[in-house]
Length: 394
Image (tube, rainbow, N blue to C red; front, side, top):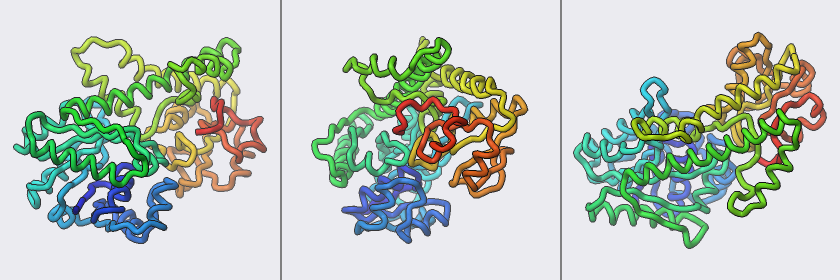
């Protein structure tokens, strides 16, 4: 089986490696540096399993910037290009997805396209109508930053959306699901075949529920701080209820990353003319939390605030839509100077803040060190650290 994958972010590269264990895979990206790294079996992303598999596993994987050539011979084309949320249009920017679809239809109209990019509810049906084709599936991904390949090797579930009534595409959906099962280590993977639009809705509702859970425990933490209570004891007590559980409960500065901010806003936009209270509150709660965190830091009256790493999570280099950026913006608006320590930054300045490479110098210059997640490096200066990280685990 020949498979082409458009985009080599976490979704695209982890799927490329998963499938290249058993099939010929061509991964397409517009960034030549990433293509060269993959072909040299170096990961352009921070992800333990991706790094290990590229270095150690026999993979039938080639990266290229030539999408036309990669798509021409492919049986399946997996589309995993970025779809950033456009706040002005209240809609994902799906132009990169459509560019791939147009090229595939030009060079290989018989290929089965599988959209894995996050898209609005109803998008795949509309795009099938726009391009007069039914050869498009939608398969949502449920991957964590820094653990994308692991989550493909041990998936919680596989979901493939297919246009109702099309038997040929139903068989293609079953074949694609088998490809994912074949590459996984986990056995007995729950697999669900749905209509196209229902599969899209699963993705957005799943991520919005996770954002809701983050927002809930953050507001619990805010209450505890304001009332002088121990948030950890409260969280532990309610988590012992098996219906609630002890997962996804560590307070933070807010939800961020690749998916949750944009997916919650897109789902809320899809609720236009549909009654709701909770969906809007989930989006608003993230702003409220960042306002509260910034106020707590400013109450310490620092002259210089040090930001320790921009990424939301440990073992990640992604800081897109990081809640830490929102904290920085609020602090800077009050005229407080900011310095940064983040080894992933290769510039002297970032967002008008000076980047300090040496940690000891960074700590010396910072009156308060702000860390969404605590780690061992901060231990010697913990009296300066402001964090709401209770469990020191993620």
